[in-house]
Structures are given as C-alpha cells and as structure tokens.
Length: 449
Image 1 (spheres, one colour):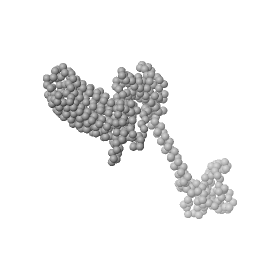
Image 2 (cartoon, rainbow, N blue to C red):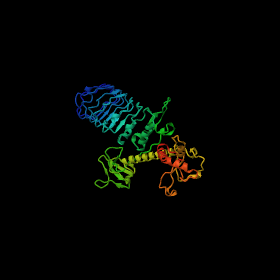
Image 3 (cartoon, rainbow, N blue to C red):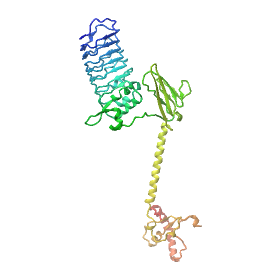
C-alpha cells in the first residue's frame, strides 16, 4: 500500500502485523501508543528501513518473530532489542549492517535463530556463542555472505555440536589456513548441517598477491597440502577419573551409554561408570580393561544419533609417568658418567713402559700380575737416585711366600752384583728411602707401567 508510517488505531487483539513491501523508513518509539500484548509476529521487510528507535519495541514485548530483512539498516546500537525477552526468531539479513554493538542482543534469553547474512559485517560475533556470554537457546547463527576474513577457530572448535550444527559462515573472504580446513573437515565428518549443506560454498583466499579464491575442502590437495583430518581418541591414565561427552547435534536428547564389550551402563549398579545428568559418562578410577570403544545412543522425538568415543588407557598413573622419566634420566646420566671415567682412565693416565727408566728391559721380565710404579726423584744423592729409579712391584702373595705383604723397593736382597760394603751402605739408607718412596708414591701422580 506504499505506506510511509504504521497505521494508528490497531486493534488490541492484533496477533500478526505484516507491513512488508512498503516505504516505512523510520520506526519511531510512538509507532504504537498502546501496548499490543497479543502481537507475536511483526514483519517489516522490504521497506528501506534506515532507523530503529531504542524504544521502538517497548510496547510489543511479547513478540516471538521479528522480520527486519531487506532494508537499509547500517548499525545495531546497544540494548536495542533488550525488551524482546520472548523473541525466538530475528531476521536481519540483506541489510547494510557493518557495526554490531557487543551488547545489542543482551536480554534476548529466548532467541533461537538469528539471521545476519548478506551484510557488511567484518567481525565474527563470538560473544553470541561463546561460553558464559552466549545466548543459551541460540541454535542457529547465520553470518554467511559478509566480509569476515578471520575466524576465532580455537573458540569455535570447542563449541558444543548443537551450536556448530547451526553455525553458518560460508561465502566470506576467509584467509586460507590449514586450521580452517581441519575445523570444517571435522564438522563434515560429524555430518553437521552447517558443513554438509553448504560444502561447496566454503571458500578462502590463498596467500599471495593474486588473491586466488579456492574451496576450503580443496586445501588438502596441491594448494596447501593440509593433512587429512582424523578424529582424535580420548586418552587416560590409570586411577584417573574421566568424563566422556556425548556431543550431539541437538539439545535435550535422552542419552544412554554402552561400554566396551556391549555392556550397558545402568544406574544403581556396581559399575565404575555412571551417566551424569547432562548425558556425559563419568568413569572413576580408570583401569587397563577400560580401554575400547564407548557408544552413546541419543534419542529425541524426531531425531536419533549414535556417537562413538574411543578410549586409550596408558599403563601407568599420571605421577608414575614422571617417575619413569626421572629414572630414565638418572640412568642416562649414570651411563654418561661411566663412559667419561673410562675415557679418562684410558687417555689421561701417565705414560706407559716406553717412558720408564728401564725401558730397555724385556717385557717378559715383569710379572703379568704386577703393577709398576715409578716416582720422580727429588734428592741429590746419586745412590738415593739409583734407589728411587728402581721399580716398586705389588706382587701376588702366592709368588712371595714369607713376604707377609711387605713392600721391597730394592728388589732381591741377595743380589750377587752388590758387594757386602755396598750392601751394608744400601741397607743403612733403606729405611729412609722406603719411607720417602712410600710418601712420594702417594703424593705424586703414579705412572702405570
């Protein structure tokens, strides 16, 4: 009807008001002077709407469906939709929205579907889906066909499956990255609607001046050679308490679990596993035989889903792993120290037989069981030097009967080459030289012959 304003005098029993395809450019606060308590559907699409008053929805707090699509809206101010606590569906697609205040949707505790596609949005509205700030009942968020280049991939990956199932961001100029491929490949394997329904519409821009646009699911080929995604297994340690999540595509489903060996988890039994109120499975005091595939059966009135979780149990406790590592480290250090000591013994010992004073002596004259020590003489007495240049031998007791283990630095006392006078002279000096020899041996560096 080419209306430029909303007609006045609307009946109080109005439940659906369709004003689409008109010329209403501004939605003022006084567009309805009375409260329309029965109004639950308001349609204002295709009007060229440019302005929304911050008080435009004060008298229609019972709206459940609001269509503001295909207009000329450019920004969404803070708290603009705050009165709409009962709203379930909000259509804002095909506008020119480039700015969304982070608090624009605060208070919409019952919002289930939000359509923001075909706008100029460059920032992904993470606050709508992130834990502790998200709209608890929001199950569909469409930000496709905007100008988003970067996504908070780590935050998106940890979202519950029922949120990811309705999270659409295709047809955006995303920058190509293997993490983006991994994210969507995981969603596609899980058969999430957001990845399956628009698989060919997820594109990205390759690095480089050409700005080549390719499909995200083609990044595993020659473009970036991203590795093929594989579902990771759950890992646990002995005696650990573990919670397995049944991450379904829909909310509020009835969930039952089956353990490895097709054993159904039943309440009130003596099993170490029990189903928590949120449908996840808690296993207390993990054991080796808890390894295997766990099956979660999720059921609702119109949808059934089966989820498999593979659990691998390590054969040690969390603390035991650290002790094992410390033991291995200590053993390695001990081995290295032994090697160093052996090398020091082999290469840092004083010179061998060829540098001894009696180097011309035949090798066979020394006993194979003896260790020869030579000391550097420090006295000026030639006779004493001759004594000190002699070898000191530690000879097996079986070869010297009657020696009683005593040290004999002068060899055989019955040497025929010494006359009696020389022998008596040597005997007179022997006590002193023996003491000095022993002292010198233990103070100087021994040389093994």
